[in-house]
Image (tube, rainbow, N blue to C red):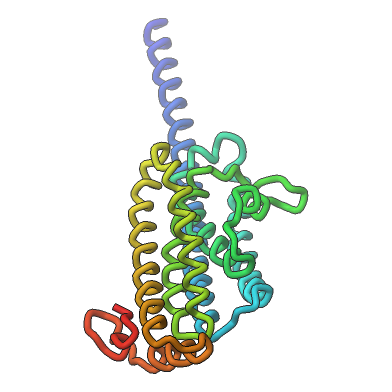
Length: 265
């Protein structure tokens, strides 16, 4: 009888252990799904903000403070999503769910750094991002991984490439494109020293190089045509604006149109 009782006790202990493990696994899956949804929402809002900023800049908005005011509500909305994650990411729990949070975090950093560049013409620092992801008392919602910061600001170069090329038709766009080109070139140089420590950054660096080449090609082609015409800068800006600004969508994709006059290809 004692052996039977011991066997039943052992069976009950095993079943109790499995109940505990099942409960922990269910909690893990529930938390993971909740964080995935929040991360996806942050990603979608960040993409919409980036698209909106591009649209605003094509309309000729150059005032940095105006850009900051436009972006502020969206950035706050995204940051509130990260604030809701704080209870589930306290202590070592963040590193358990980091891969779930990372996509939305990187997209947010890309949108934030794009806003920061349009406002201040500089790269946002790691500390500035971490401060944005903190409550009023300065307590972070979660620790900001350096790699996520680097990957987020690395994606910024692609948005700057689009911004530089779309700026060309506007008055003063040549100077804007040259300034962006210099900034992206410096980012590429700085990121190069960090690629041995991050495989993902090394992959993104190839995209950064491609973006830089596209900006350089356009800026160089326009500069050459400007020297050929040898006209005052104001008149050249007007000619470039009329030539590139009146072309139909699609002309810049794979065939020569009015852009060819200024070597846009």
